[in-house]
Image (cartoon, rainbow, N blue to C red; front, side):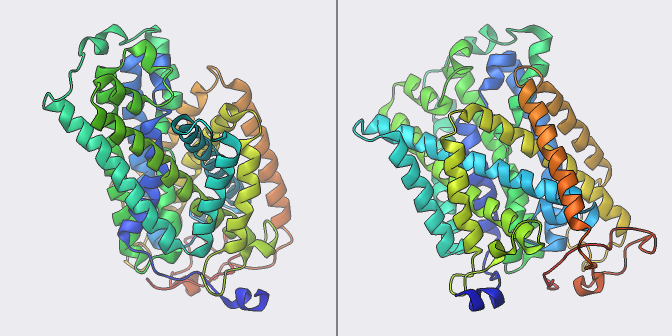
Length: 470
């Protein structure tokens, strides 16, 4: 298999609905759980503010990812964008951050599925069910990205439809609501609570930028990536608004802020069995979809790091039959298990958020550098051009830094550890890169030389892949 795997490459089979399924599939779990800790910090108003501020940041990040993903058409996503337009140290650090972000989320999702299964069937134990979920989703991703993301499409659609059905049933009076809950817990910790609530705002949308990481496997990435990415962002904005309303009028704020499964608890408070069953199923399926998408994206990030020799090139092999980065996929198993059974899962998830926010600083900065180096507006260089760029990219960076600063309220040491960890990674990868002699061949991408290329260090890069025109 080794000889064939050296010559095999990722196959272009994905369509826009696969891109949508990857992005929304990873993120929708954040609307079923996790976001509600904004209520514990800042009440209903704090949660609303966090949803809007984080939503603004993610809309901009999504536009940046659409433009960068459709232009570069590479599997590494944020890693490849930073590698091309910022530099090797930042690129490898963001590639590692993407990997950590998605692996931690996969582990959390698998544990939640195991807990749900053990509640329904008390004879089941959490440990073996978690292992089974991780192993099953890894096997699906090993066999092929089309199967994995087609599964994600159906799981995600069912979970999203469950929210929509419950929302309209509530809006048309089928479910009795309690509008007074909106005011009873509106602002329990004062104005400082509004600021502190921002740290959990990303839960509504965390990971949507990963939709663009399948660009190298899309049939027509110039169309599929922007369409799937933006459709996914719109879906999540609608879902977040419906979720906040449903939970705020069905669960008292003091209970909502500590709920493990807020949407499922809202359904239970309705007292109607069909909604309880529907939202229970939605909770289970969205966790599976999220974990499945996380396996896909984390393996692509590790594959990209391997392909450029930042980690062992052994991981960059592509399966000759299934056309998947199978070694990178398999390597997600021990890392996910290590996260899942570290005993500090809440700390791991916070580290995932820190990792994500690092990406949300460097993704828009990559877009700014892209626009600076390649101001051309031709479709070959920039198939999709986001509105108001690069100006709104600066705004996204400011929001990401602001949200990072809120982690000092309760997660100060996690934040410090994250800075130290990625700081060490930056200097390590920068030093490792100095041994490389390869240069960027912009003509191979069909692009002109970047502006100021005669003086820039941007040319000293490891590529190792060929670019198609579409």
